[in-house]
Length: 107
Image 1 (tube, rainbow, N blue to C red):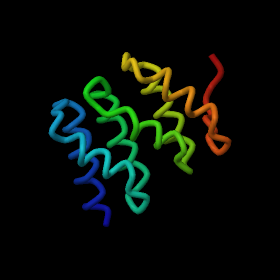
Image 2: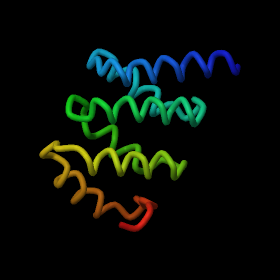
Image 3: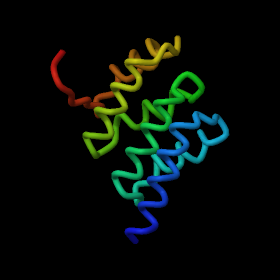
């Protein structure tokens, strides 16, 4: 199991550096995979964050609801740094959802 995780993490980290848009679909699937190790999912999220201007914003907003608060917090930071014009619309939608909580450091 440890070897598989390290290969998955290395793949996600490599894709982050490459910023290849062909990888976005696989990275989103990894982020959504609740059976994947937390660190693999976080690496996939960081790779998507590196490509945030090419990445669909909706899967990132879904990740805000992740039960792992570190995934939600990291996602919030990635979204906040994005220049995607749909962000305001997505945040307005998120405000209406009663089950959405983002925990982060002040400031």
